[in-house]
Image 1: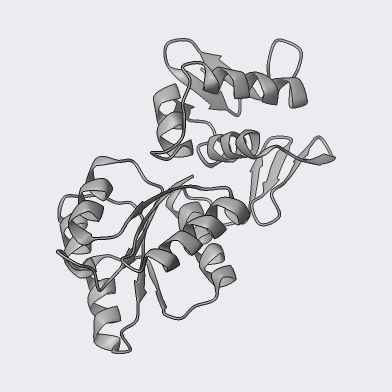
Image 2 (image 1 turned 90 degrees about the vertical axis):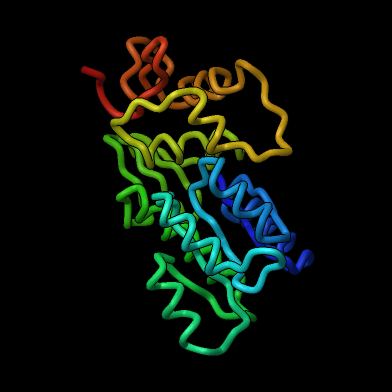
Amino acid sequence: MRVLIVEDEVRLARNIASVLAEVAGFAVDLSHEGEDGQHMAMTNPYDLIILDLMLPKVDGLAILGRLRSREVLTPVLILTARDGAGDVVRGLDLGCDDYLTKPFDMGELVARCKALIRRAHGRPSPVLRVGPLSINTHTRQVTFKGKSSFLPAMEYRLLEYLAMRANQVVSQADILDHLYDFNSERFSNVVAVYISALRRRFDPKPPHTLIHTLRGHGYLLGGPPS
């Protein structure tokens, strides 16, 4: 999952990014002012936007209003140091999905981020189930046909994203957009490499019954394509 943090407190933004990357396994992009953050939010396919209200150049509520007016439906979690209920009400009225008041607990932030992303994909339960596969998004434990394991970071990211989009065809470009941030080095065959690794682990012998390849279109987790 790919998250954008728009927060002008540089140290706080970096701390949030570090926690989301290490604990949740998210790819994270950062912006420290409103104009740049707004541009990034409108031009990249994020799974979640974490948005501070008090930003230089363009404030958070203005960004939120513009996103929703242009039908950008990405979940938005507002961070605010303001105590007034009016700011929270305005944010909710403009279309934010959740909010936290500074200072906040990082564990709570991670839990809220995960919940918002799951709900956006129609997956409110923390356990994703696709046939004989289940993924506990809290512990990052993967169980397949009764056998549990913990995967390397990128294999887990890919499998979780495909499970969020279960029974949908997901293109290679879509996978790259949602699993890598701006600073990541991408190789042309990286998705195929990780798909092969997942198949070796869970579904080694053809015909593959867990992850299907639709040539020229992408990949489908679930079964089988029509």
